[in-house]
Amino acid sequence: MRRWLLWLPLALLLVVLAFAARELMKPADRTVYSAMVGQPVPAFDLAPLVPGKPGVSALALRSGRPRLLNVFASWCIPCIAETPQLMRLKAMGVPIDAIAIRDTGPAVRDFLARYGDPYHAIGDDKTSQVQLSLGSSGVPETFVIDGAGRIVKQHVGDIRADDVDAIYQAWRDAK
Amino acid sequence: MRRLGLLALLIAAAPVAADSGLPPAELAYTQLRDPAREAQAKALMETIRCVVCQGQSVADSDADMAGDMRALIRQRIAAGEKPEAIRSWLIARYGDYITYDPPLSGVTLPLWLAPLLLLALGAWVARGSFRRRKKSST
Figure (cartoon, rainbow over the protein chains, first blue to last red):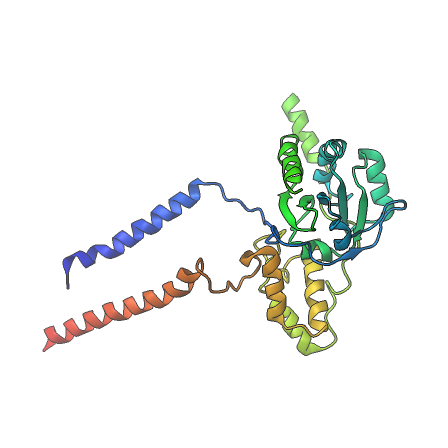
């Protein structure tokens, strides 16, 4: 038996330890991203949830004009935190549609009255089926959709003040 | 004293609800009538990751979203869809991360091949040492 082979297990162990140390050093990103970015919005048609606002469908998202699709819920606290940013985007001229997850009309009406209403349309997704078809893993999430109905960007979590520019830019680039 | 007061306030604080108040989806906690299909659905649910509570399968989790994913799986199985088709549908949405049964790909190749390679290496080492022992005993 060749002598150097004796060192092989130790060398392998060191490789494994180095790998483990490297992985321990960098903080893990546990965010679940959608694999649908770059693809057309899957077919769906959601009924309206509040009076005076239309529902949302894949067809309506193919409007020739880029839009934001915000996945939210009235029971979700970070959704409250992001409303000022959505209001700002709306004021900048960005059309925003929404999918309300596991929600009721009165609760959403109350939410919009209290925190502001940035939405053009709100679709009712009582059992998260459309959320699942988008590859979304929670609320809030925001998708940038181009004029042809293709998803060009996903923002996971609430939109902070310093995220607004990047989202606005992605919306402008989607044209 | 002030710190103590703050701590007391913390104890009294109520956790904020992170789940909706809506009842679970129809098939989230109800089995399918056909036991064969329910068995198929259950087997699939046990290998699909809950994206909210990432260490659990959707069969194990009580999160709203896991319930909705169980409902989705049962509905599709009941409609006659094959479990592997549903798995691919989910992988197309969430990537390989969603399944606990990782498909063979460039990234997972070491995962599949390493045990086989190690086994072969072990057999080779064992063969060498057995042979030597035989030689020394004769």
